[in-house]
Image (tube, rainbow, N blue to C red; front, side, top):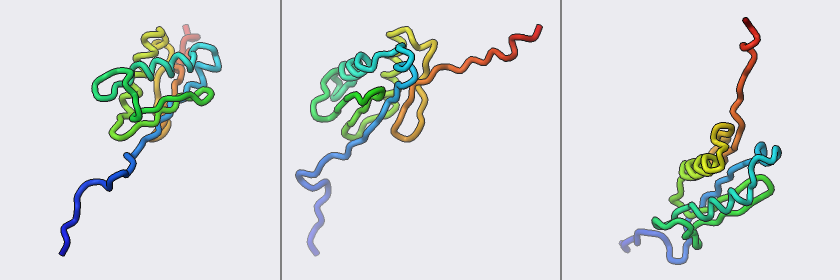
Length: 122
């Protein structure tokens, strides 16, 4: 019986994950600029322990009001949430916006919903 080789085939592509951060609400209200957010992600994402070292492993680009990140696995979706919150804090928007997961590969920036219905009673 021939021995089976372990590991991946030579020349096989690494699996990639596609993550989307949807910023349509703050962009519609002119609170957030998608281009600066995209630049922040490009400068902040660490590959092999170095920030801004994206190379072939990570690709960040813009689609209207969305920022799309294609990355070789392993890459954490949670890391994108961390960087998004860091960006919001830097822009002093963290008190008004939060990051919510809408599905397995997508985050969305939303405003906090503040209900003032009970304040009218005296």
